[in-house]
Image (cartoon, rainbow, N blue to C red; front, side, top):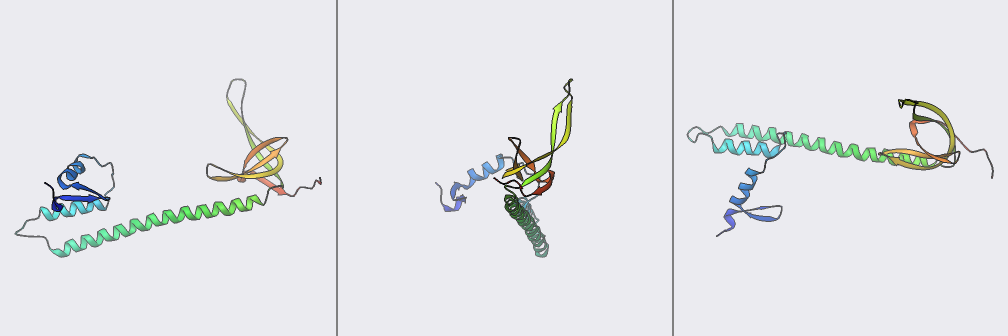
Length: 172
């Protein structure tokens, strides 16, 4: 018969404490990092296994907890900095897309790398100067690129390959 003293609630689900403890022991954790859970387990084991006639001084536990708290705060700072970096990167990409959108309708010169094979099947590549009209902006593998029409064909051009941008001089 279970009562509230031998149950445990994890993520809103109530388990029998013994059954939950058994599942925690049998599930191997594949985390090589020494995180806060491991630290707390070590601290509890240290408390359980200390000599009752010669207990450890409380100040050493407080020092360990202070170190743990500092470690946890540093980990949170790193996580927040990574999140901030993603936000800044997204803002930079959005601004760049806005700037590239202003190029639509303009002519550009760019360098296109052409990959081919020779008669023996060996890879060959050469670069060719191209000219075309910007018709759109796209994102390829997370990087902004422009769509250019030249000679009836469409090209996806990396912005690093753009040599010159100029307004169209033809009138229709």
